[in-house]
Length: 451
View 1 (cartoon, rainbow, N blue to C red):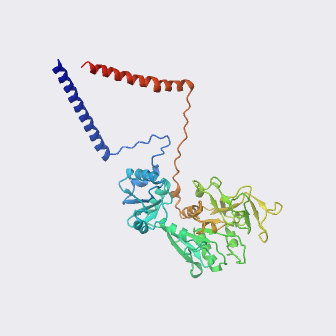
View 2: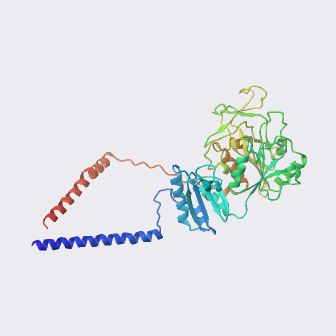
View 3: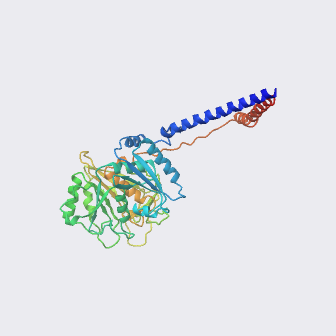
């Protein structure tokens, strides 16, 4: 009898070992298959963890291999999220691979890539490098589009009239934005308009940033010919506060309907000062330039930008920057700045917009913002100032597809249970389930005692 019990125990033990071995073998085979044929499922309602159709299409059409290098500190809060995003791209195509680098551990490599800030992502393709503007699908796909294009857009910054210079590294210069645009894959050049017969043919956008001296008639004719021929101009103009005399382009751009009254926008609600109007997310007017723009911006010493339909026959105006009702526009800038309701004009006040030709065959576009200091080295890094400047340039250069991917929103879901449902959950989880497991355990234990 004892020998039979021993034989049965050995038989059960052998069967158990065989079953465990088979189970482990099955797991190993499944793991081996999945390692080479990864399966991914996104069960979220809004597809939060999936790439958009536009991104998938771009990745499927990639011809050359792209390397994504993310520079993150070891304690970076966005590192894990960025790596999940990179994995989504590499899962979609074998043409993309990514590397995570800690710039503190590899300073030489960071210096080689020109990294000055943590949480920076660089894309490389056939020796070309550009930086992603944001660690999002939108930012990464935009960079992917730019680096995949054979031709680069060219931006010309006019100089010779006291404009902000892209070569000036002081606080009032534009060197930060100039370097940023180059890292984004654009070509940036200066344009001494006085010595040129006309705007170069390769100019995708001409920028006039804070000119303080008058333009000659020859320079005006060059700009007019460029616009009439379907050109794109970004004009940043400041109020005339000193004895500089200004650029005189206010009257020049009046031919397109631009109304640029000299004066100051006063914003009593601004935490930065009454002469620095501030726009918070959600305060921008509806336009493709600000469609998904959710950053605050501020504008040191800004003037109003409007439209005169009588002067601008054949043109139209779409404002996208406008102050709140609490702001005022004053032309009395000679003494102490104070608000006089009997003298000053109450907001909202537009100070940035786009001028188009009514004739759709004329592709000219003129963007005017009543401040140039918001994009200088001292302010471009703050809030969304630099991002707004880049949005304007990208749109003028017909790069609108680079900012068209809407971020996916995670819907808020609330589970509401009745008292009866709560009691049922309590009974099942605290009483029935534990007692059932205990009963099964006792049954198996008694069965083995009989062996």
